[in-house]
Amino acid sequence: MQKLNATVEQLLQRMEQLEAANKRLASQLEQVSGANAPASGAQAQQAAPGHPAAPDAPTGAAQAASSQQPSRLEKALEGVTVGASVAMVSQSAQRGLTQGDKSQLNYRADVEVEVPLAKVAEVGDSKLFFHLRAGQGAGLEFVSPTLTATPNSTAFFLQGGDDSATIIGQAWYQLSHPLAPSASGAAPSIEATLGKIDLFGFFDQNEIADSETDAFLNNVFVHNPLLDSGGAIGGDSYGFQPGVIASYASDVSENSHWKASLGVFASGAGAGFNSSFSQPFAIGQLAYSGTVLKDRPGNYRLYAWTNGSFVPYNNEAATATGRTTGIGLSIDQVVTESLTVFTRYGHAFSGDVRFNNAFTFGAQLAGLRWGRQDDRVGLAFGWLDTSPGFRAAAPTMDADGDGVSDFGYSPTGAEKDIELYYAWQINPNLQIFPNMQWIIQPGGDPGAQNIWAIGLRAVAGF
Image 1: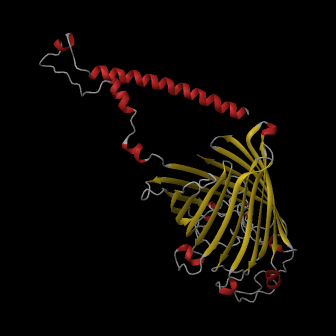
Image 2: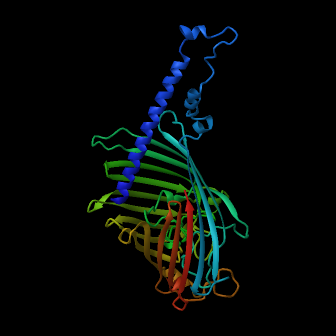
Image 3: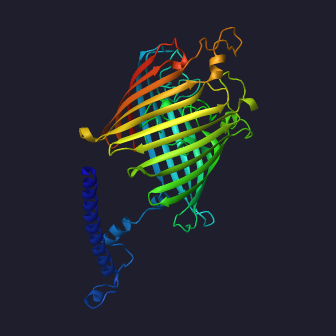
C-alpha cells in the first residue's frame, strides 16, 4: 500500500506539471496568433517601405512551440523499445573437484530491440524482434559430471576460444490479429511468429524461475532440464534455433486467459542452418493465466514435445529409434502478498536420455516483512532421476573406442540440486545476488563427491 500511495502521489504531481505545461503552451500559441495577425491602424503605418514586416519569421514563442514537435528521428523511433542488461558472476567451489581454478569470473550482456511495423493488409499488428548477446568466461566446470546441472547458466563464451563472443541470438517477425468477439464476449486472437527464436520465451515460461540473470543461477531451475541442457530441444551451441510458432488466445473473463501454441523448430545440425528441416523439434502447449487460489493470480502450462534429431548419451547420430518424446508442466502461483511458489515436471517417454524424470519446485519471498519490499529471497530443490537405460549402459559404455569406459561408474537413484539466493535491489537499475548451491550425488554417481559452490552476481539493466 505504501508503494501504491507513493505511485499515486507521483502521478498527481505529474498531472499538475502537465496541466501547467498545457497552460503555458496555450498562452504561447495565443501570442503566435496575435503576432501573425494582419497589422492595422498605427501598427500598419509603422511598417516602413524599406523594412517590410516578415510574418513568416518565427518569433520566440513560435520557436518554442515548434521545438516541441517531434523530429524526423523521433518519428522514426516512435514505438521502438530497447532493453539492455549486463550480468557479471563470480563463483567459488567450496567442495568438489574442478577442471580448472576453483574460482571463476564471467560476464554476459544482452540487448533486446522490438520494432513495431505497419499493419499487414489491414489484418493485424506486426513487429520485429532482435536479441544480441555478448559474453566471456566459461564458469565453473567440475570433474564429477552432473546429469545436466550447470552452477552458472549465465556463462556465455565463444566455443574453442577465449575471446569475447557476440552473436545475434534471436531475429524474428510476429503478426498478431484480433478476431471478432464470441457470443460469450471473449475477444480471441491469433498470432504467428517466424525466425530464429529462443523457444523458452513462448513455452515452459515461469514467473519466478525463467531467467538466468534475474532469479536462480543453476539451469536446472531456469527451464525444464529435460528440454534445455538435457538436449531435447536440439538447439544450436547457444540454445537458439529457427522455427515457426502459431498461437490462439482467448479471454474467458477480465482476469482469466487461455492460450494454445504449437511450435516447429529446426533441430540438431539444422538449428545452425547446416542441415534440412526433415527431423524437427515440435512442441505444443496449453496455458491458463488467471485467479485460482483465493483469487490470487497464477499461471499453469501443460506441454508435450517430440524431436527426431535428438543426440543420445552415447553421442551417436540420432535415428528413428532414438527419437525423444516427453511431456512437461510449469506452474507458478501467488500464495500470499509476498510469497510465490513454482514447480516444474518433465518426463521422457523415449530416447536414450541420462535422466527421464525431472522434478523441481521452489518459492520466492518478497522482502515486505523486513522493510525491503523490492528485495527477494529464493529457494529451490531439484530431483533428476537417472533413466533405466543409462544405469545399464554407463558402467561399460565405450562410445569413443579408447578402451576406457566413458562414464566409469554405475548410476543409481537421482541427482539432487538445491539453490538459495538473495536479490538485493540497490536501485532501480542495479541488483546484487549472493548465491549458494549444493549438488548431491552429481550424475547419479553414488561415489561422487557432493558439489558445493557460492557466488555473487551483479546485474545492471534498463
